[in-house]
Structure formats: structure tokens, C-alpha cells
Image 1 (cartoon, helix red, strand yellow):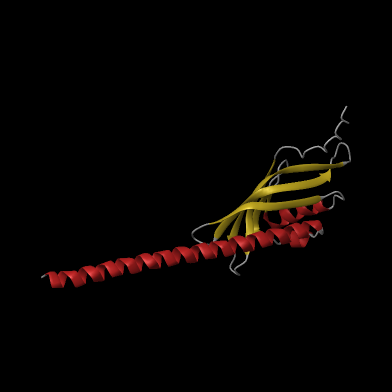
Image 2 (cartoon, one colour):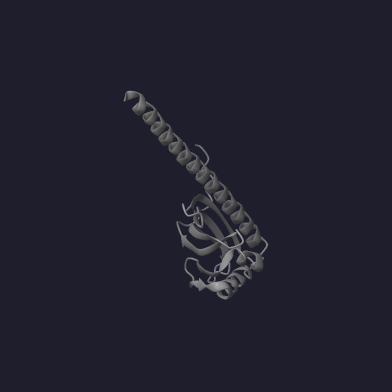
Length: 176
């Protein structure tokens, strides 16, 4: 009887070990895929910053899905391609406009079709009161959705101004 149980027990243990290995391989594949998506999103955001630097509304707007929402701090929410393009055009028409941002974190959903990036931004624009360049810094979060063509587009993009940019340091007083 022991001879019949032992092979069955060994076979069962081998099957469990095999399934465990499959699960670990799937998790490793998921982690590899998530890392690849995160890298794509970071590269996309770097290109997006260049599009803003070039004041290229068409390319900047191209990072958004057709039904996206853009919610910049202190501005009205822009819904859809037409509203986003109009809002971006108004921003880039400002001769002092500059926008840079960088993700500190990119997280990809287990489903593989949604992701978000979270980071900081710096925006310069003309202060309407003083007519001088003014700098705003803050945080952003952008939700991405994988498109039918495999690209990732922003579906929700929200910014919140944080602490003001640090003032230029005053020269140190001479030692007495």
C-alpha cells in the first residue's frame, strides 16, 4: 500500500511545485510587462515636455485620448479634444510659457490597460497683474488608458499647485 501512496504523493508534490513555478513565471512576466509600460509612459512624458517646449499644440494635444479631461490648477476643467486644444493654445500663446514635468512613480494596473503617473511640475507663465514671468510648481497625476493601437493616452490629467518656487538665495553676509 505504501508503494502506491508514495508515487502518488510525489506526483502531487511535483504538480504543486510545477504550478508554483508557473505562478512565479507569470508574476515575473507581469512585472516585466509593467516595467515596460512604465518605461513607455516615462518616454511619452519626456516627449510631451519637448512638445510643450516647442509650443506645439497638435503634438501636445496628441498625448490625450479624444474624451480626456485636463484639469490644471486654477483653471476650468477642459473636456474632450476641442476644449483641450483650445486651452493648450491659450497657454502656448503666452510668450513666457514653459512647462516641465517628470514622473516620480508610474503604476500599471494588473489588467494591463490602465496606468497612472504621479510627479512634479514647473510652469512659467505671464502673471496677468504684473505682466512679468511667474513660476508655479506643484504635483500632478495622470491616468493613462491603453488604446486599440497599443499606444497609451492620457484620459485624466490633473495638476495641483504646491509650495511656491524657492526664492533666489540672498548672498551671504561677509564674515566679520
